[in-house]
Length: 245
Ligand SMILES: [Zn+2]
Image (cartoon, rainbow, N blue to C red; front, side, top):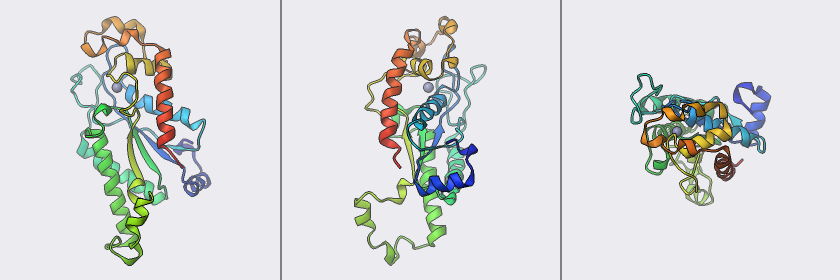
């Protein structure tokens, strides 16, 4: 369900049943002359909407204002929007803390931007990872008081941790596409353009392929909805393995 459309009794049900709560996370960034600047975030939103057809999930209003950076193009006339990681971390902490206060314990930010470097981290995903950790510590200290971890009730912490229980799983950040996925990773090339043709065709205008002059868009003209559907199927498998109740 879209969070902004939920009634309180539905929110309480989602909490009681531990539904995954997903934040579509991305950027607004120049993606060549042929594709919309919202591509990265749209890919997350559209695949989560497909996922919602098969599983119970809360989809938060998307956050488009990540750190696009100006690595691809200067902003003037290109459309890239850059909000730095430090600002994102403080925003994210407030957001996650608030979601924990509501009662959610199964929160996931799903990001598609610079995720070929997800293991080491890039500014947007690192900021939201930091935000999640900060929010969890702050929440636990508020709920349980300082010294909560050292108290006697926590004596089974390591045993429970070994069994998979972990407060720090309450907020997680995942790439939309796992590194193991056999799908072309690119920026505004055949991979991303095909994904948009499959998920959100109004975000691509084939009439503008020939306006592209950059190396990273050279393969865009070979994109197809058919290839995009293969990527979507892989993303759906990844989401099914990641977003569990
Ligand atoms: Zn992209």
